[in-house]
Amino acid sequence: QVQVVESGGGLVQPGGSLRLSCVCSGGRFSHASMSWHRQAPGKEREMVAVISATGNIVYGDNDKGRFTISRDNAKNTVFLEMNSLEPEDTAVYFCHYLFPRSSPGFWGQGTQVTVSS
Image (tube, rainbow, N blue to C red; front, top):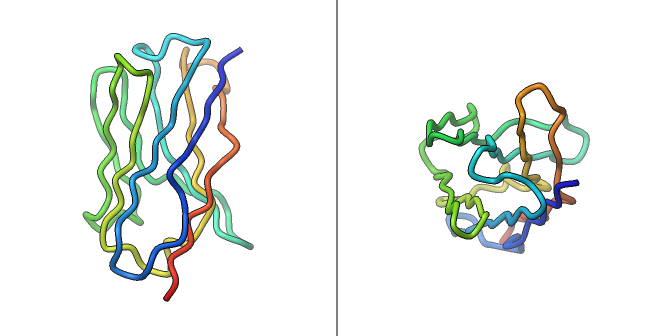
């Protein structure tokens, strides 16, 4: 069983920044593809960013060049740096661990990000 725990969410003003962290335990983090997703009220969950075990990165359409995903395998942690935040970025942000590819993976409980003045 892999445990996935997100942190770093909160209330931020438009134009502000946040750094989300996701710590994994119980798995093979360095082999896993890690991703961030978000879900706003009344909307479907959408992919924000993915970083593979080899460091390949893909961003979702919502990025607009404002988000940066990174990982620290020594700390079993993946990060999401978010800049120039907009009210439309308000959502619960979830971290997903995937290894092996054939598995459904594991989700964290989510961390709330609220962008409001």
